[in-house]
Structure formats: C-alpha cells, structure tokens
Image (cartoon, rainbow, N blue to C red; front, top):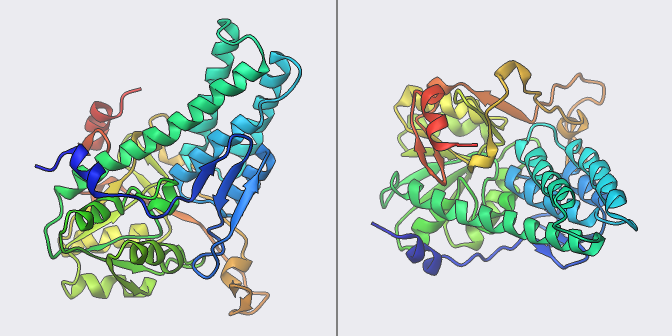
Amino acid sequence: MVTLEEVKNAFKPKLKPIEWRGDSLLLLDQSQLPFQKTWIELRDPEGVSSAIRNMQVRGAPAIGISASYGMVLSVNGSSLNEALDSMKRAKIVLDSARPTAVNLSWATSRMLNLANNAVEQGDVKNVKELRDLMEEEANQVFQEEYEAELKMGLYGLEKLNSGDAVLTQCNAGGLATGTGLGTALAPMKLAHALGMDISVFAPETRPWLQGSRLTVYELMEDGIKTTLITDTAVGLVMYKGMIQSVMVGADRILRDGHVYNKIGTFKEAVIAHEMGIPFYALAPTSTFDLKSEEKDVKIEERDPNEVRFLRGVPIAPAEVQVYNPVFDVTPPKYVTGIITENGIIYPPFEKNVRKIVQR
C-alpha cells in the first residue's frame, strides 16, 4: 500500500499556475495555452472576477483558490467596518463570475464568514491584522486543496493497474486546481511518478478546447503517454476496448450523486455504463452542494460566438442560432463512484454522501 508521504516524495508539480505575491495575484493565463505562456498580475477583486469570467483561470478548485486571494485583495479601508463592507462587495462581484462552480461561492463565503467572526470577537484590532488573517486563510485554502488532491490521487490509484488507459473530459489537472496536481488527473500523475505504465485519452472538449489545449499540454509536460481524440470519437474508443476506466472532475456534486462537469461528461458516463467500464468523478468535498436539488442548479450558458468561431476564425454562419451550455449533468445511475479526499463514495449516494461529506 502506497502512503501519502511516498507520493509526496515521488510527485513534484512542474506546473504552478497560481502564485500569491503578498500584494497581488499572479495567474498563468490559460486562455493563451499551449501556444503562449503568459502571466497576468491582479491587484483587486474586480480583476480576479474578470479573469474567472474570461476563463483565464478555470476549473472549480482553481477558481475557489483565486477567489480566496481576490477576497484578500478586497481588504482595505480606514476602519474594520469599511474593510468588511469592501469584502461584502467583493463577494458579490466574484460570485457573479461563474455561477455553476460551487467552489467559488464556497471560498468567498469562507473568507467573509471568518472576517465577520474575527471582527465580532475582537480577534483583529485593525485593517492590517484583518488582511493578514485573510491572507493566512487563503494560503490555507490552497494547502488544503493540494493535500486533498494527493489523497484523492491515492484513492484513485486503487482503481488503476499498470497498462491501463484512462479516458477523461475537459481539464481536471493541476491547471484546473491551481496546485499542479489536479483531481481527475491526480491518480494518473501519481501512478506515473511511481513508475506505473499509465496512458490517458483526452477528448478535445469543444468549444474552448480545454482537452486539446490544456489536458494534453500538462500531461505531456509530466511525460505521461497521451492520446488526443475528437469529442465524437469517445464512443468508438470505448467500444473497441481501448479504455479501462473513465475519470473526470466535477464543478458541483449534489447529495444524491448528480455530477455537474464540463459538457460531454454525460455522454461518456452513458457509454461507459453500456460498455461495462467504470466511471469515476473525482472532487474535493468542497465541491459538494448538500442543499440544492437538480432543479435549483443553473447550467451556465456562454457566448454563442464561442461556437460560431474557433480561436477567432468563423466556422459557422454568423446568424445561426446557438445553444452553448458549458456543463452537463450526469445522473447517479451512471456513476460507479465518487472519489474524494476522505474516501470513495459508492451508491446509494443519497445515503452514503453524508458519511463522507460532513458539514
């Protein structure tokens, strides 16, 4: 049995897409990858919100980490009350950037609740002390995420054998989480670091091409065998026996096991179910939404021109009507298990989620 310390020593992140500099947040601009490695420096919550909305930073955990630092950047004013008011405004601005990813509002709520409690209880005496506390908490959000990914990777390793090929969807690696490891890609990265023969099939993920631009990029950076396929080839590669398991990330998971992830995930789950291939969603417990029901969740729709154009080049009639949902929802009947930092959750999810996700 591989231990947490063994994987910590074996795996060293090569990509570090988020860097906190004390008075600014440095983000690797994922909208420019893999052709340009460009960094953007942000000094206020409005800039962080814009980076999230424009998908310069994307992936639920990375969004949550970035939002945490965005809340730090909002702490200003001549009094604690002014600082709290500034943080409340920042939360509204940040939360509006991407409505489906639950990590966003989870992170901003965590930061604001801590600030309110610290002021009410007299734990901080001035704005500087409040900002220092917020910075410490944002750093803690980052560290907790990395530890969670290591643990998820360990649990995911239990489901892999040397020689396996894994199908994923979108990008749920270190770029999406901000740590360099990832959720869905964590088992593959740790397996590779430990010397196992593992390969990954990555669909392109239209229209933003996170699979071809980001997943392929970071897997190749780590030296993992990677095959890029079109989104429409998913069924064939599973039918031909080229895939041993499916591992995807998640932007939101409900208490009954409904998994919200990048568009195309539902298709993978249904085909895997028909082919007898295990389908796992990997996500930290912060991604679980224990209050909402399926009818309550808003599926984000984006600019129709993302479909009409491909990196600025028109590929469809300008006047064609477009439906551009960014996420889909996978019903629990198609989910073999949900891998978290606290263990693997199996059906029935309505009963077992609460045993692992405790709040």
